[in-house]
Amino acid sequence: MYDLESLKSAMIELYKMLREGMKKKWDRVLPIHELLFDRWELAKFVNAGERTSIYHMCYIYGDVKIGRNTWIGPFTILDGTGGLEIGDYCSISAGVQIYTHDTVKWALSGGKCKYEYAPVKIGNCCFIGAGSIILKGVKLGNHCLVAAGSIVNRSFEDYSIIAGVPARKIGEVVIDGDKVILKYFKNKAGRTDQS
Image (cartoon, rainbow, N blue to C red; front, side):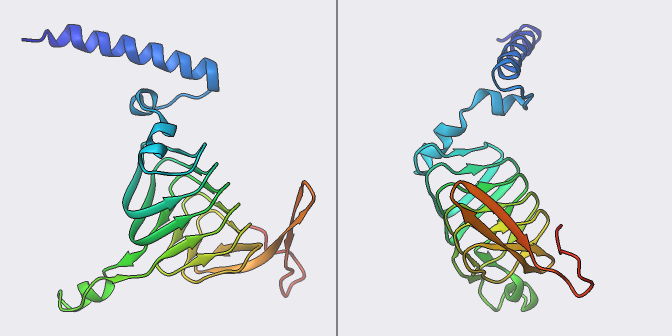
């Protein structure tokens, strides 16, 4: 039989030691499960590309393919039940949800209709802002920026700046050598649509 108080005390000491190491090395304070497990090992386990990291607070379902040098943040959902591809050098921020299916017609029909599936593809070098939702069937080109809190329900071409509910194109990404320029469109009032 285990002495629960001794076990609890040992766990607390382990947590403090791991927490101190993380704070010293990366200047971060994380929950214990993120201290115990390796984000890069999880990425290898799901066959993601080299140097990709996936937080353990990410839910991954179905057929999900993730490229190289991509960062998947905490509290994310990657639904690959309809097929999901995420390119190289992407940042999928905290709280992002990507869905490749929905149950709308199934629920409305009392189960008579089937679930609907459509793949999602996110190109290379994309930034998906915190709390954004990408719905089934969406294709994002390379070098796209999705603003935080957006709901993306249609596809966008390369170099798009996307924002809103539902999302719309509000500007373009310009790559000039090693510089990135975010060019926002002007609205009817003559102001830019930056979020």
